[in-house]
Length: 620
Ligand code: PRX
Image (tube, rainbow, N blue to C red; front, side):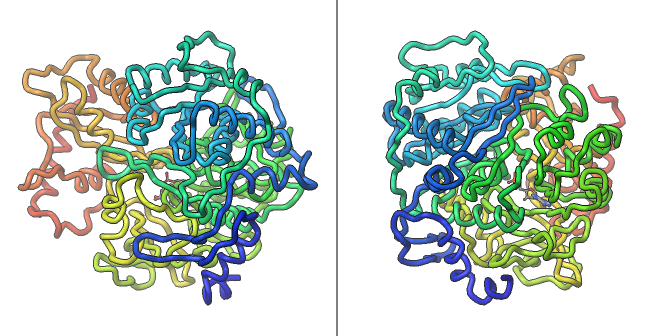
């Protein structure tokens, strides 16, 4: 497969595309007008038809599409036919609210089956969904809705997290208050808590569904029409709306799900991500459902009510494939072997990881304690932008090395290069770039093609710049070394340091801020903030807490710095740029490599002195 795909990638992807149901066949597999790729040009397809109708009409009709457990322990199973019906109803309901092809619909929901159903309902009628992770704040929802010019919001009354009721509707109300563009809010009743319903604007999901027909004519989409946008952090203050296509994206995620997870008919496949991240889009919803798989979904916290929650569920439901993040593995490892050992995990046959490099120790623990030494581990490297897994072992084919994502997927071409785009020698660090287009690649940044060109295609001309550092070893295996830009990976979530800085600066007391990442035993990295107060600002007891609370309100809990230091100045280059790279390296305890780009090599000493001063003070 590797050889065939290498020899003719377009033919390889065309063969994968043949496995899907097309309304009209494509004329050309790929139009490549760098850096814009158009896959399956002329082809028409509907993603929800591929994820639902073709299974609901065949022998998989009564097979479980989603097996779900809520945090309080409630259980539901939706067959392919059930899910098809619900999606059809919501498709019609959304059309009834005036949603048309190309309109953006924002989804802010807990991890309940209605979240994939809402996504697929959008796909059915050609609306472009923008899912926002349930941990984001009202302000973050508002910014994203404004950027997407989204008139519709789909949410729930509340969700459960660690025994608490998360008031999603209340947060949603705050997000859309005074936002004139918002016309309708659809509310699913999950927790049965009291919520304010605004007459004319707010609609109960169950009432809309009850009044709607389950047969919903699918919108014939051009393969190149957008399926969704998903906001992710970059190196500036504003998140980017990553825009994905319909046809190419679906081909990419369907093929990788089938091959990387070696899907079988008797699998119960569990990807532990939240649908609010790309992993949930590609490997809970579109990839597995396009393959007719049975997907397990869990609503709540991994350690609730006890640290064996996941393992109890693996045993209860007979999960066969488990795909999760290294940060979760490290947390379980720390909480002790006795929790997984209480349960029979012998149904598992394959394990996966995603989101950050996995340290060999955690890899071995996962292999031994969870996989019983029996299950291959697929360490999958990819990004929101790549849409699909790009570097990964194929189970049973690739000999794995703990800590390496191994090789590019068939048909994918990756390289590690230096500053000038030249491949670096074996075992030398450099920038990871992708040298050929792949079907699930982002189409652009929503309404900002210039930023798309600039961020991804200008650093190394002609090649997709991933923002990750990597090296390739003597066996041509890739070892990911983390981000080389101002993006930080905290517990497998991408946080832009500039985003956190601008949140801090929006606090009335703050003049300037610098945020860097620091190694953290569980989260991979944690955020450290250095803050300069405005003239006259006073360091009070509660200020640090107040700043943390402020970041939580502006972005969400995931972006709150663990440490906040108040300082009188920040170290800067002569041109006035904060020396973030030097601070980061010193905070991480790394040796400073190349300081040639610094205008002032003495800067390192200066920052070292500065850090000693700042951190010599107890955190306030
Ligand atoms: O740094 C890489 C890291 O996660 C980044 C992408 O983050 P996001 O767009 O949020 O998507 C996460 C889920 C795909 C990458 O730039 N990353 C992802 N997978 C791995 C990884 N780093 C090392 N090994 C991986 N397997």
